[in-house]
Length: 188
Image (tube, rainbow, N blue to C red; front, side, top):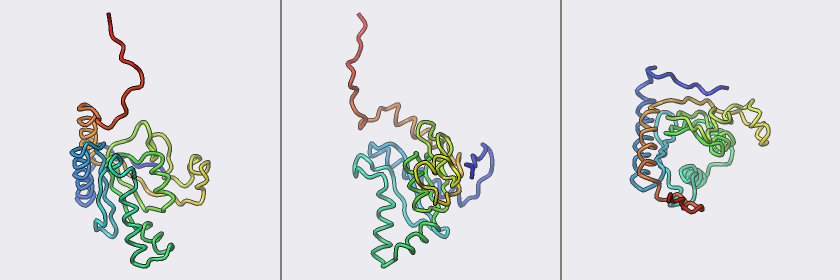
């Protein structure tokens, strides 16, 4: 299962664009909170059931949105099998290609499909570096996830907006980035 990188100029359904716009709005909230601007919405049966933004510095948990759903579903009395069925019916809209760790986790929980904005050329797990969304991926097999059925993946949706948010954030400087360990070189 390859990532379907959607060509520039290709038409997207209003529904796909609407969900991605919600993810972009979440990314803007992340940036305003001095977090890397990545936003996400989770959709089941055409309805948003969760929306969130990067809050890694605040919560130290990049999976907080999924944790909230899991607790909610378990609190409703769903069995593990029913929770798995719920995740299998969900689509994820995220502004940046899931990293290797997140793509593996999405595959393990059995998410149905992922729609993302821009590629993640350094850490992308949906085709840029590894293809962990593909159940036949050698990388998937090597990490012991050969039982995964994988998930459909569509990239390039509103990519320019996602890239613009990331570029603006890093041009301002990431205030939460670790301080350099090397001393600055000064010219005489």
